[in-house]
Length: 491
Image (cartoon, rainbow, N blue to C red; front, side, top):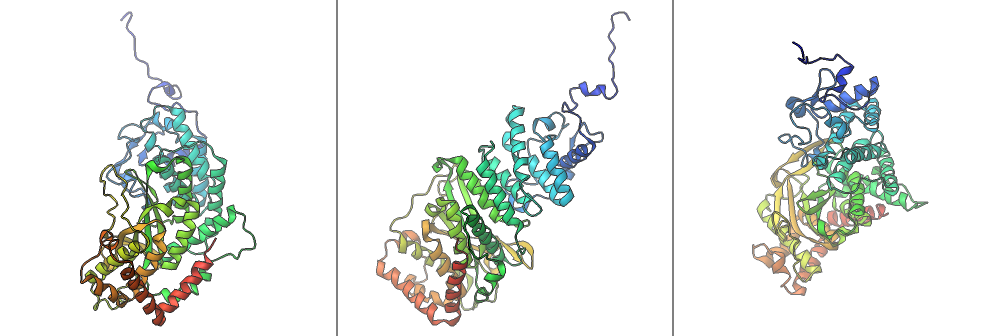
C-alpha cells in the first residue's frame, strides 16, 4: 500500500548496523580465534561470533585457581556477565582489545590450559567495574592487567594474573607505574628460576622464602651473595622430619593505610612470592575492611625466615595482629596417646597466651570490622582446614586428628619468631608442656589472664622449656639447625 514502510533485512556485512552486533573493528582470523577462546574461558558460547550467550555448564567446567576460590564461587557467576546476549558489553569491558588477545595467543602457544585460566582471570578483573559506564575506564583497567601479565613467562604468567585480579579488586589505581612494573618483572624472573615444585607442605614456605630473598637482593643489587637453593636447605631439614609446619595470617585494618596504592603494590609482590599453581591458600586480600596478609607454611625456621623477609617488603606486618597456625605433619610423630589432642590443644593455647604476656603488658584494642567487631577473636583458638601437600598433590584436611590446623589468635607485632619456635617445640615434644600443666591446673590461660600473672612465673615456664629443649638431643639439634636455616635465608 502507498506510504507503507517495509522492514528491510540486511545480510552481512550490513548487519553490523544492528544494535546487538559488535561495534568494534573487525578482528584478524587469529584474533577472532583468541577472542572466542577467552569468551569460552568465561562461560560463553556463540554460533556466529556475534551473539554470545552464557552457559552455566561451561561455567561449571572453568578451572578457578584454588587460591581465588574465596573471590569466585561456582554458585555466584560474576554479575558483569549476565545470563543474556553478550554483545557490545564485550567491547565495553575490554575483552576484544588487541592487548588482551595478544596475551591469550601468546600463552596458548605456551600452555593452553594456563591460557584458559588467564582468560578467565582477565574476564574477572571487571567485577569492580560493573557499575562503571565509562568504557574508557574499563578499557584502561583491562589493558593495565594485560600489560602486567605480559611481563610473565611460562611459570609466572598465572601468578601475575591472579595477583592483578586481587590488586584491581582492592579498587586501587590501574595507571601505568614504571616502578611497579619493574618489581613485578623482577619477581616474575625469579619465579622462572624456581628449581623444584612443592612436594611436601614445608616446601611451600621454602619456595616463598627463596623467592623473597632473591627479590630483595635483586632490587638492592646485592652482589657476591651465595645463591640459595632448596637443596642447600635440605641438609639442615632432617632434624624437622617430625615437626609441625607453621603459618600465619596478619590482620591490617584498611582504614589505617594512608598510601593505599603503594601498600597494594607491595602486597601484590608478596602474593606473587606466595603463589603456587594448585595451592588452596588464599592470596592476601581485603576481607570486610580487614586486609588479611598470608604466608606459606613451613617448619618453624623457614617460617621465621619468611616473616623476616616479608616485613622488609611490608613493614606493616611488624605492628599487626596475627593468628599463628600449627599444622600437624604426621599422626605418629609424638606420643599422642599420652597427650590426647584436647589436652595438647589447650596447653598450646595457654603457651601462646604466656608468650604474648612475656612481651606485652596490655591486651590490644581490636580494630572494628563491619560485620563483627571481634572479628579477630584475639586470645581464642580455631580448629579448621589446612592446605597439605603430599608427594606434589594438594589437599584440604579438616580437624587436627586428620592433620588439620590449629590457629591461635595471640599474635601481635614482632612476637611471631618466639611463638613459632616454642609452639613448634611443644607440639613436637608435648612433654615439654608439663611446666604449664602444673601452672594452669587443667584450665586454659587466656592473654587477659596471662598479663596479670607475675613476670617471674611466666619467665620460669620458658626457662624450664628451654632447659628441657637443650637436654633433648633431637630438639637441641633442631634448635641448632634451625638457626642455620634462618641464617641461610637472610637477605
